[in-house]
Length: 108
Image 1 (cartoon, one colour):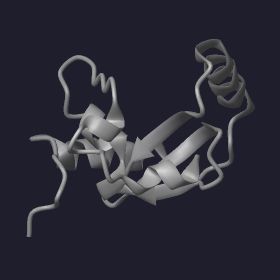
Image 2: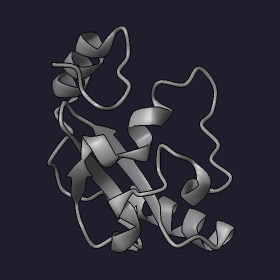
Image 3: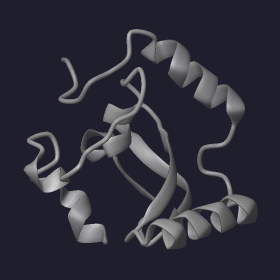
Image 4: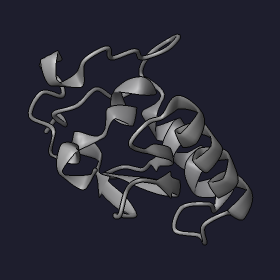
């Protein structure tokens, strides 16, 4: 069964590399937290995250403005971002059909 989100042609290699890094489900990193806090303040945003995409979830290594430590991959904005060659820019997530009903809005 195909997932209801895009995947990469080299998805298995990406997941293997992520697993080999042994970083998922580790302690928060104070240096990364300082970076996400600074970025959140600089851009005056509701949240700033450093997330890692596993087979079925998005796990946050660093988070500002988000109370949860992970979300299902199928609602992850980053699932779409990692499939882009350049950047994923979403001017208005509520107007974008991929994200208009995204439950992540409840976490802000």
